[in-house]
Image 1 (cartoon, rainbow, N blue to C red):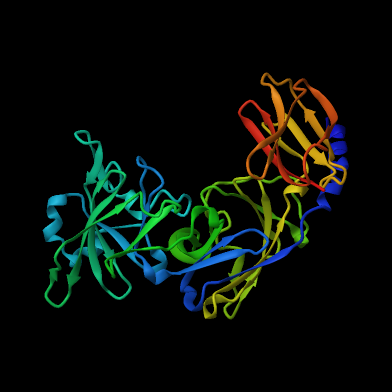
Image 2 (cartoon, one colour; image 1 turned 135 degrees about the vertical axis):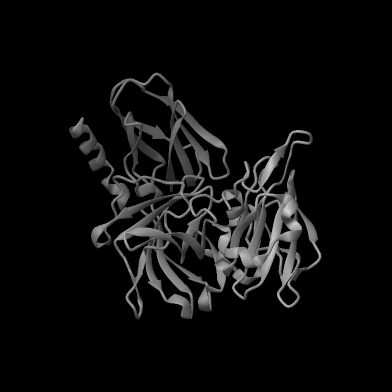
Length: 419
C-alpha cells in the first residue's frame, strides 16, 4: 500500500509545478479600521468596502424558517439581555447595566448573532403555535461607545423581522417614543444579510451580493488567550463566506505542503493570529498558509505579507490558484486519487487512483464545465486495487473544467485545464 501511494505521489509531482501565478491581494480598511472590506478571489482580486459606522444590526435573510440577528461589534456596540419579561419594556433602567448579561456574536458561524444567545427558546423569542411565528420574549439594551443606550426587542419573525426600539434620554432619564420597523427577507435578494441603522432609522446596504465575495476583513470579537485563560476581545482579521471552507497549514520556510489539509467551515479559520504586535509594529508569520476552498471546488493558497495597523488599515497577501496542485486526495481512507498532466496539452489526462477497500457504492468520474453543465461521465473500478486510466477529453473545448470523483455520497473535486 505504501509503495502504491508513493508511486501515486511521484506520478503527480508535475502537478505541483502547474499551480497558477502568484497574485497580490490588497485590502484597505482605512484609518482605525473604519471599513469592513469584502474580497473576491480571481484575476482582479475584487474588493468592496463599507463603513463600519453605517449600520447597527444585521438580519439573516436567506430563509423563511431560519433567522439570526447580529450586532455591529466592529462599531463597538454592546448587547445586553436586560429582561426576560416583555411586560418590563416600559420600566427598563439603564443604571442596572452592570447586572445584565452581555451577549456576543459567534465568530464560528454567521447564523448565530448576539441576540440569538438570549435565554428564550429561540434566543430572543418563543414559538407561537397559533400563527407559526416566533414572537418577542427578551428585552435587550444596546450600549454605544458614546454612552448612548437603546432598548430593543424583535417583536415577530415570519419571512422577515418586525422590531421595536427606543433611545434613552440621559437629560430627562426617559425613553423616547417607540419606533417599530419591518425588515422583510425579500429585500436585497442577492445578499445574505439585511442591515439597519438605529442611529439613522433606516435600512442600509453593507455587503455585496453573495456571489461577489469570499472573505471579509473586519473587526470582530473572539475568545482571546490571556493569562492562561480566554477573554472576549476585539481583533482585526478575516472571516470567510458561509459557502467557503478553509484549511490552515503551518509550512516552515513558506514551502507549500498540501499532503494533510483539513478544511473547516468555522468562519474564523483564517482569523487574526497570522500577525503579532511587537509593541511598535506588526510582524507577519510567513509560515502560516491558508487554503481557501470555494463552492465550485477551486482552492486558493493565501499567505499574508503586510499588516500596517490602524494608521492605514492596509493588509496585503499573496494568493495563488492551487486547485491543480493538490495532488492526492482521499475520503474515508477508502480511495486516493489524482490526475496528470494538468494542464493537459493534448486533452488527455491520466486518472490514478488507489481503492484501499472494496466499495459497495458505484464510483463515477463526472466532468463539468464552469457553467455547471455535465460534459463527461464514466464509471471507475470500485474493487480493491491500484489503477491508472487515461481519459480522452478531446471532444471538449479548451478551457477550465471541474472533475468530480463520486462514490456514494462522497465527492472530491479537482480543477482540470485543457489547452
